[in-house]
Image: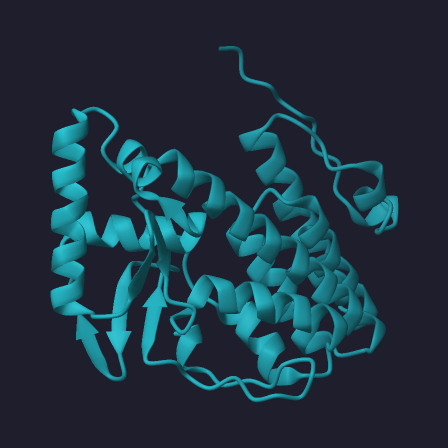
Length: 256
């Protein structure tokens, strides 16, 4: 998990592991040191909401997490969630009057990923952080369908896609083709229809004089676009390869 990886920040200070580590990427998991802390779902939702939303008044939390019940039931549910959390993980959240906030000492993998992403954009020679960006696993809270989760999930996803593209481009410029290909392939794995990452994969193959690999990947991506979206690759992508190297295949659109 990202929270277990120590890395050097841009100002040269070492980021040490905090008492609690919260994992939101791939699944919800809370650890204190090596101990996994099991929380009921209502408490998981409270912790996740405060992590994503930030400090929030109790009425906002109640209305978001328990929107379809009466105020008295929502207040009791919040009180129960807080009580259970204090039993399992004291000091994980704090109260400032009517406002609840996640303790700033808690390490959160999605936040660490965002920090590492910004660091990698300016320090591509730092191999540990670059590897962290490429290999960070899982989407944010898969299987959770709350609006506040879906929005944050897409934000994290787009951040990672853009950073992987930028990282691959910089590594290509430094002729670090193996690392560039790993970043571009991971980007394409997350979003197979993303043209920018597939264009980078083809460019890397061409830079290494692997024309057959470049043509093969172009044809794979072209066919994928036709099947999934019924469209052709952009002229910019098609222009990477000499026309005679790409076998022309008529676009067939199946009538619905």
